[in-house]
Length: 332
Image (tube, rainbow, N blue to C red):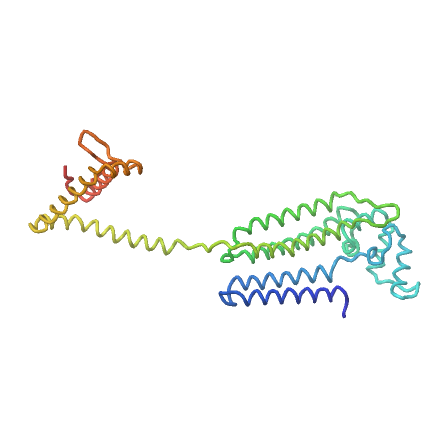
């Protein structure tokens, strides 16, 4: 047993690592994958946040000693020396002695609740609300910036969570603004007995780290989007097919002319078109075919030139345009 916070962290870390190892061993794609690497990154980040939240929470002498916030500084000094089993005339560490000196002011105690003990103790030149706010803001912002970097890491291309990056960063930005607003504007209420004071800094610090703990885990556990396929191979394939089609279309005009000069080919072509014409007449004469074609929007219309299907008209128009582009005569 080292200490209660350290023991709690080791137990929690063991549970997290065992669960992670169990999950990674059940992955069907093997161990060395991008998803598993990002899983390890999330686990490392989780352990880091847990270690900070469990073992390195914000110091607070009032909660640590269980004394009211309104207790005089000299009495606090005596309680500190007694809790450390030191003589009453023993000197305190310089930072702690400076803190007790500043806490002689009631306004400074309200700033203690608002900004925490570390800010009041470390900022030697600060005397006003604005100076303490300027001193505390960069450290708070650094935590959010670091978390945004972690979010960017676990939503890199190929993770399947790229679409969530903007939302997560926006949530972090909103949380930073809300926390800063609460710290700067929330009225501090201190009861007469000085007990049960809501320590705004300490509770917001814990809420911030809870957000840092949960957000990457939630992002990583959400369903992954299917991988996006690069259009480059498809564009290359389409380009190749278009080039081949262009060559075939250009060759068709010469093939047509050659077929017309060969009696056998010319006769076979005419026979094929005649057969297609007869089969088309059979289909157009069938009442069931006409009714089904009408339901599909491809019905047969009776015009001045005889029965002509809508689809047939479109096909003839496309064929006419293609033959004109090839320089061939359009049959009437």
